[in-house]
Image (cartoon, rainbow, N blue to C red; front, side, top):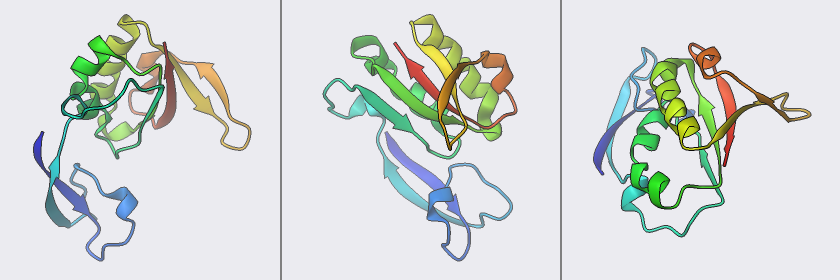
Length: 131
């Protein structure tokens, strides 16, 4: 919890692509307050979706207490090549506490496929994790 610097395109288009990661085309920056999931008062979650432009590993770090006391039954998250090695480290920890990690394939007719965590390094993927 605290503040975070966000980066976006200079004209403010594509705000969905705002990220904590600096990229050459994201030349506009601003600071926002942020709160970790552990600092939020939430009921136990059935599903948690994380699509936060390369900050998924940071979000998992910020929910360590939640994962011990009341882990979400399922999570959907985006793996980006930008931060895939850090995310893979976190996925190994999630697998160790019982999460099954699967890749969501084919947006037209979605289905789940088991995936090796190492295969995600350097790749973009939508993942489904379940206890």
